[in-house]
Length: 94
Image 1 (cartoon, one colour):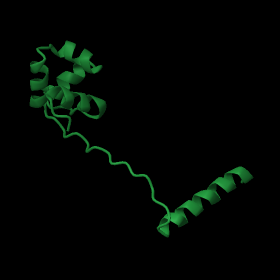
Image 2 (cartoon, helix red, strand yellow; image 1 turned 180 degrees about the vertical axis):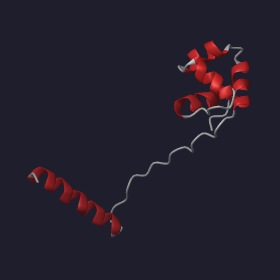
Image 3 (tube, one colour; image 1 turned 90 degrees about the horizontal axis):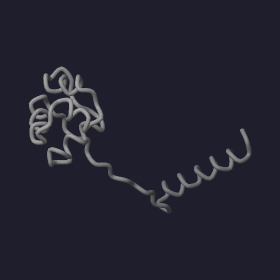
Image 4 (cartoon, helix red, strand yellow; image 1 turned 180 degrees about the horizontal axis):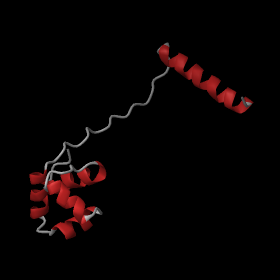
C-alpha cells in the first residue's frame, strides 16, 4: 500500500473515532422520497392534459413511442427520470 493512501485511511479512521466519541459531527443529506408509480390510465391522463399524441409525448420525455404505448397499456410502468418528469407535468412532484 502506498504511504499516501495509508495516511488517508488512517486520517479517516481518526475521524470515525472522533465521531464515535461525540467529538465530531457528520454532514447528512435527506433525500426526497422516490416518486410513486403511475399506471397506464394516469400516464394517459398526463398526456391528455398536454393535448399531445403518443409520438409527441414520447419526444417530450425523450423515450420511444412504443414505450409510451406500453405504459398506457399497462405492459410496463414508467421509472427513473421519465417517472419524475411525469409527476412534474402532473403537478405533484412526488
